Image (cartoon, rainbow, N blue to C red; front, side):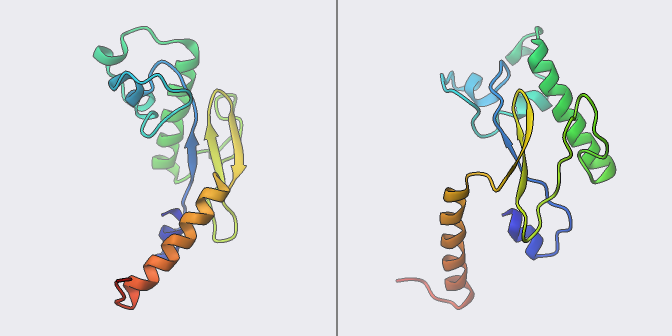
Length: 143
């Protein structure tokens, strides 16, 4: 989807992977899941407070993730750049993707930069999408 946004004229697209597993991983709490790592939408517990769900106590690691996420999202809304300046809170410069470069920010206990997350899986889905999209483009149903 990120590449598609560039194809249709998007100028600045940032990709991230949320890997942090703390005490506010939303879906794990809601569904009482005992899973390692993070799952889809777990970052929402660090962006939006819910005292009834999470309680009032926040660990220092969870507070750091809350501060990082809210600062990244606020910076993006305010400046169009989630990391306009590096700091102790945001010690890396997050670059947008391009048609030839696929950087992403891994949001975990430490913020790290990577290139093209889940490369093998993404290559499969890129090929699948290109094949399917061409069928739709030319009115082919594949039946």
